[in-house]
Length: 511
Image (spheres, rainbow, N blue to C red):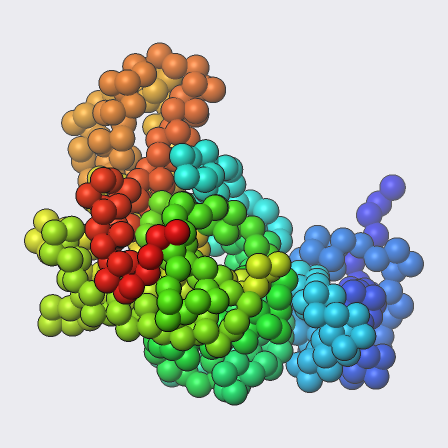
């Protein structure tokens, strides 16, 4: 039986019908959007949608985009830009999404409202779940809690043709960065993601205008972002704690955290003040206390040393004001604290000590987790004294920001093929040729020490399953070592003693 002939008018009708069902798009807005789409595609009149709507991606969106490419409406490299544009045309307006969000929050609760926005983000392809589902994820068991390891395949490498096209694009300063609220509706370019499907919710944190949205990359459940309306650099100040606690007052079912405000120990975007949060599933949040302290100056706050790989002071109290005060006190103290015996220098010609703060709310009240960070470098550690050493850079070289510091590692997509190459050597299907592996043009050259160690430990006659397990265990152990590198107070007798000295200097007494 011959396949049904493609009709762009029917495809447009299917898109509008999908928007009506899954976006709750207004009927009158859809009439307007349908006419815009018909005009764009040169259609004189509308068609009826199929009685049973096809799959959104493969049955509605892909055929429309392919039609546009075949008819010269966009280049193949512009497929994502065109797709986002046409979906954006049938999306509810930003103001109507805000109104619906607020209505749901008032009548059904804030969790139902965030579920609505998250669902809209997924159904509109703002969160591209088909791409995200390609990521490889597993659990790495560890002595201080399991880590989550992800090989990020959601963002494929760009080919040379696309890179050449990008290089010819004019530079622009609008939006100022990818976090600015001006991204809402922005058409994007080959070197900038389209954002016609982005929707944000205005909130006030510390009496300032901020915006709540979901991350398009979803590194964990309900991965969300809060961003300042003002385009200003990241800064950890006492006001940061107020904003974080304001956020968990608004969204008590989420945690929220801020990357540090210094390079190496900060996130990938330091130019715009923002937070990241979501469901309370990050490994660090599941860990118990190792030591408990009290302070006469802050009697309603329980102070604990978190049983975690890096150096975390956790503060818990139902008294929010007192919690903010002790957090500000620790921040000020840590900014100026040095301990030469373990390599901590608060300042040289620049500031080195800072904090990665995380807030959550639960039965015990508010909790602020303060991860102590230091970004100093020296000749021996040019990438950072409290940063993974160069022998670990084949697994992770980038800065260890909020998400990794809390136990979710986002590893580069290149690792998938490179790991398979290592497996080939460990099974004997590829030769163990150190001369060839030393050639920097060889993609496995960065893994030379890893291959040498695994071949020495296990030989080169493993089964596929044994080789896979050896490589995964190596990656797991490296990620644990990376977190341990970020600890300013190491989990050694010397490091634990130095941590106790630091707390005692703040007049915290162990219970």
